[in-house]
Length: 151
Image (cartoon, rainbow, N blue to C red; front, side, top):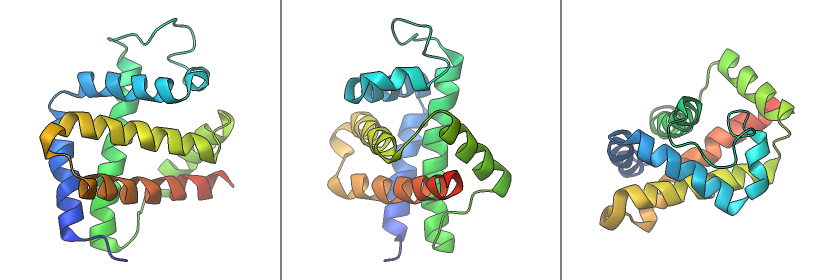
């Protein structure tokens, strides 16, 4: 099934909203990950030493930015190319880091749920099931590419 122009538009629209206050949404994103799976804290080097999520942690913000941006880019690629194309070097790096940190399939589901909750919070009344489905499709394609590299 083709990723539609409307789905791409929904992802871009919500990314535009999130990117205006990335510190707020990156903190929300990580709060959601740890709410869903508290043990995940140990998987993030920049959170291991802290008792709580540091609100001004630049590494936390940078990581959230990468996840949001790569998912948004995945949506655009799905529309333009019919698949997610990540540079081989980037994909190898992502695969090795995820493998080294012990990431397994259920962890990708936790991140996806946290991502959807964050987009929903950012979009408020503009949130729709259709928007959630568009982000899900884009994220799932990106996660599949990373998982393939991990094997």
